Image 1 (cartoon, rainbow, N blue to C red):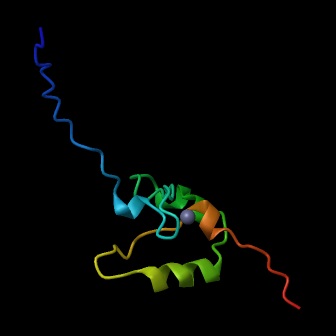
Image 2 (image 1 turned 180 degrees about the vertical axis):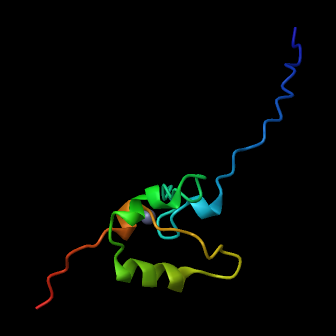
Length: 84
Ligand SMILES: [Zn+2]
């Protein structure tokens, strides 16, 4: 017969910390600071962040968004737009 499956697995849905997500694309920004690692080991210390991406991120930042939200390596990459 239909015995009710006892699904009482109330497992807390792992909501990612907004500070660990890229404000532009929403993927993990792999920030060492939000991961609890040494800030000097963060990828952004070795890679230059595109000023345009930073400006876009700050423009998208709304009330309630943590100001310490970092970009992901993809969005922060400097795209060499050869302007003439
Ligand atoms: Zn991104």
